[in-house]
Amino acid sequence: MSPEPSIQEDILPEQILQAALQLYLRHGLKKVTMDDVSKVIGKSRSTLYYYYKNRDEIFEAVMDALIREVLDEITRTVDQADTVENKIRAFCLAKIKTSEDRRPVFTAMEAGMDADEISRHAKTMSGVHRRLMKAEAELLKKVLTTGVKNSQIRPLRPKEQDMLIFILLSGIRGIRREMRHENNFSNLKPAVDTLTAMAMKWLAE
Image (cartoon, rainbow, N blue to C red; front, side, top):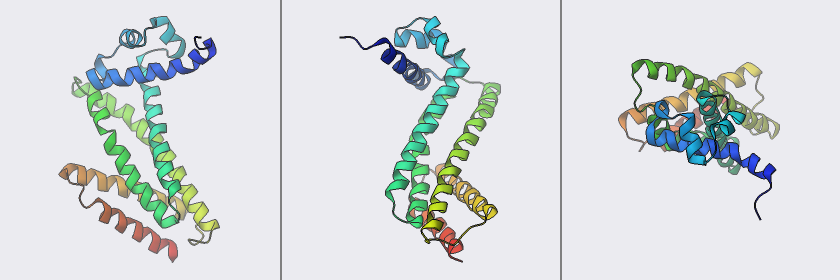
C-alpha cells in the first residue's frame, strides 16, 4: 500500500532540500536550477514552487536545515556532559567538529563563482552565521543558567553572562580559524581545555 498523500506531502520538502544539497556538492550553488532539483526528485517544477518561490528560497531552507542539524549534534554532545565545565568543553569541541565536518559543503557551494558572486554569497552566509551564533548563544545561556541553579558557578548578571558567551563563541571560532589556516588540529584539546579553564576560573570568582 502506498503512503497516504499527507505523509508524502510531509516528506517532500525534505526530499527537495536533500536533492538541492547533493546538487550543490556536485555542481556548486551557481549552477543548480529549479529544473535540476525537480528532475532529481522526479516532480514537476510547479510542485517545487508550491513549497519554495525560487532557488534562493531553497538555498535558505537548506541552510536552515544545516543549522538545525549542527545545533542538534552540539546539543546532544553537551547534554551528555555532567558539569558546567564539561559542558563548556563539550560545546567547544563539538562546535569545531561540526564546522570541520561541513566545511566541504560550503567550499563546494562556491565552485564556479566569480569574485562578485562570492562577495554576494558571503553576505548571505553572514546572515546564516548570525542565526547560528544566536542559537549557539541560547544553548550556552541554558548551560550557565542551569549551572547557577545547581550552585556549580556563581550568579551572573545579564551583561556578565552575555560577555562570557561572546568570548567563548569568538574564542572557539578563532581557535578553529587559526588551526584551519595551519591545517593542524593536534593542539585542539589543550587549547579548548585552556579556554574552558579560563572561563571556569572567572565563573568561580
